[in-house]
Image 1 (cartoon, rainbow, N blue to C red):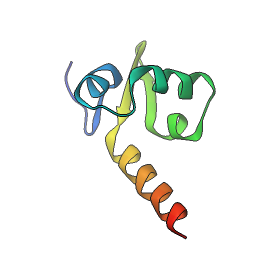
Image 2: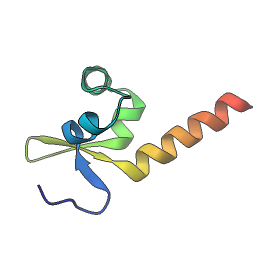
Image 3: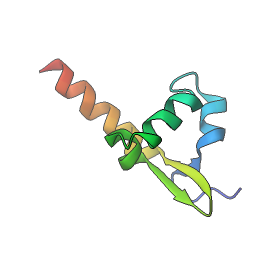
Image 4: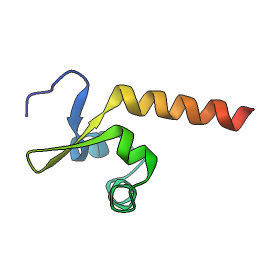
Length: 67
């Protein structure tokens, strides 16, 4: 699949990275967690992860935890 900007298929991302795994993403998507709503898009029946949004979400969560 052709990569669009910083969107890559969620399954491909999970195969390359140890965390979070695909079942965790599926749980977040199904329960409409903020991380999934901000970082995952459904395009043509496939879930794509926006790496830029995910990185900024993790950085923001780290800042909140440190305060």
